[in-house]
Length: 148
Length: 148
DNA sequence: CAATGTTACTATCAAAACGAAACTAAGTCA
DNA sequence: TGACTTAGTTTCGTTTTGATAGTAACATTG
Image (cartoon, rainbow over all chains, first blue to last red; front, side):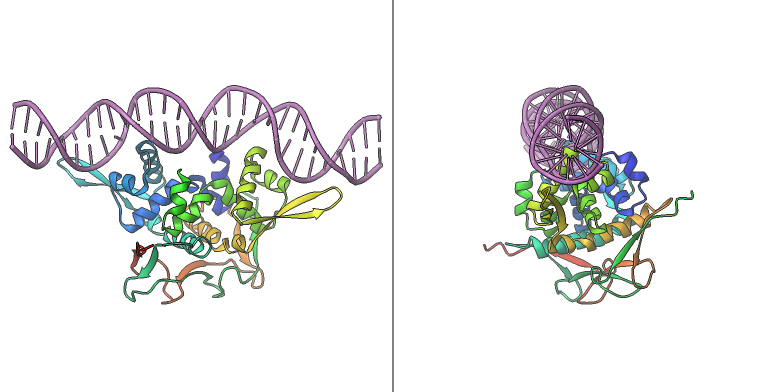
């Protein structure tokens, strides 16, 4: 991918994918939302090569999805915690999961519960303006004014 | 990535990413939702190498996101149209775009309008069970029963 | 105080994927 | 006959990945 071009792309989807369009990064964010914070936790959970994990964590940190935090002074140890931007990525992960549940749901599957009600959630994307479920009304992709 | 392991992973997010965790595939799906259907349209829109495009279109077709359709008999020409699974992927793309809009929104940006109202949409993911916005209540990831 | 363990990495290297450019195949149009 | 269109394939050099092993700093155990 030519990241340079994509970062300047006026499409917000492309801009997000420019640094997140990669399976490992998204799985790391999933695990971060589940509560993992440490290098070895991610490594064991994902079965990822440490070289790749190092790079992905660095990118996610540079891009402001994760933050390094010292959790022990002696010995000095750092963990990775979600930033606001990282936490706000949860809806994306949840919608990906919803699609996977519907179309790749054969066999045993993790499900996601509301802690208070104890029931499985039913994720739906809506347009807050009209209240309509995304996909039920026609949408139009409008190019930005090119006077900049 | 070791796709074999991930496809058997009980996490619906991982299952989706096993074949879609790639920038080009997601951008192709975005373009398909915008209305592109033909090889050269995707190639020009994305600036993607034809080798890569061929492979991505083949994967997306095998995985049931796109369908090949003959649009001309003489000469024989095929186009790629979204399947139901592909159309149902729209909420994921919209939520990715919403995140990108919020956190990578500098400069000119494509925006997405409801055709009827003409207003920009405000995408939000909610849990249809409680009606709560995703991210406002605690969630729990529940492992499947391991009695298979 | 030496041996072992823990955590978070880095080094090395073969294999796979990517990207750019040129080329092909089947047919249409003038 | 020759140019054009569409949907690719071929080739090849570069980059990225994945597996395995090793390192650095410190803690713990005997």
